[in-house]
Length: 393
Image (cartoon, rainbow, N blue to C red):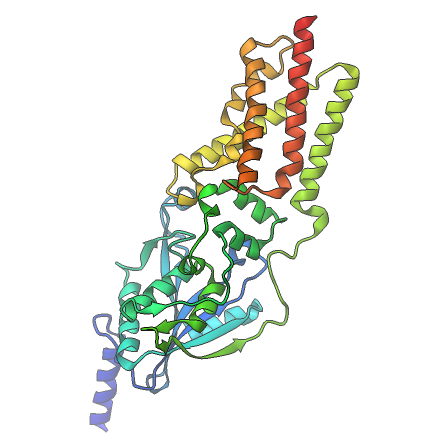
C-alpha cells in the first residue's frame, strides 16, 4: 500500500512539475481543431487550436494562439499601434467544448498523422510556448495569428516537409478572402476596406491563404508530409452548429450602401438646391471637409504611426485627405483665398486618381463608398464653379 502511494505521489509531482515534460503514451492523439465563425466581427474569421489527447494519462487539453492580454499596460494604445502582445492559451477540452457549443459554433477535428516522436515533439513545443516567459508574441492578422501559428508549428514538427496542393487555380487576394468572411456590404468590411491599404490586394500563395482558419482545414485535408504521407489521418465533426451563423447576416436597410447612399443623396440634393438658388450651404462644406480631413489623419496614423503592415500604402487618402482640415478656415468665408480655389481643383484631381487606382487594380475600395465619391466630386465641382462666378462678378 505504501509502495503504491509512493508511486502515485511521484507520478503526480512529475505531472505537475513545470520543469518536467510529460511523456505521451503511444496511443496519444494530436489534432487540429477548427471552430466556425460567429456573428461578431471579432469571431467572424473562426479559430484554430491544437488538441492533445491521451486517455492513458487522463490528458485532454487544447492549446490556441491569439488570446488577449488584457493586463498589458496601455492595452488600447498598443492594440491600435499593432504593438500588443497576444498569448498562447491552454484549456481543458471539456471547457472548450462547452464554450463553443454554448455559442453554437461548429467544431471540426483533424487528427494529424504523426509518429510518437513527432507527437511528443509537438507537445513539448506547446508546453515550452506556454511558459510565462514564452507565452506572449507579437500578433499580426495576416502573418502571425491563430491560424498561421497552427500551420507554422506543424511544419516545424515535421521538419518543414509539408507540401500543399489545391484543386483550384483561382488567384485571390487577402482582401477577397476577408470579403468571403465579412461580406462586402457590412460595417465591418467598410471599416477594413478603409483602414487597410493596397498591400492586401496582391495575389497570394496557398500558404498565405491559411491566415484564415477555414483554409487551415481545407489545405490540411490534402497536405502531405514528404510528398507521400497524408498530414491528416482522419476527420470528424465534434459539434455541429444548429444554425449557419456568419457576420454577413445583417439587415440591408441599415447596411453601409443604404446609409451612405442616403447621406450622398442629401449632399446631391443640397448641392442642386444651392445651384438653383445661386448659394452655398457653408455648414455642409464644413462637415465634408472636417470629416474627410479627420479620416485622413487617422489613415496617416495607421500608415506611419503603427506597426500594422497592412495599413500602409492606403490610397483612401485620395478622398480622405488630411489637408482638408486646413481648408476649414476658408469654408465659412464669403470671399476665399486663391490657394483655396486651387486646392479645390486639387481635390477633384485626387478623386480622379482614386478612380484610376480602382480601375487598374492598384487598390480595391469599399463599393459602399461609390455614392459618396460621386457626391463629393459633384460638390467640389459646384464649389469651384460657385467661386469662379463670384470672382467674375
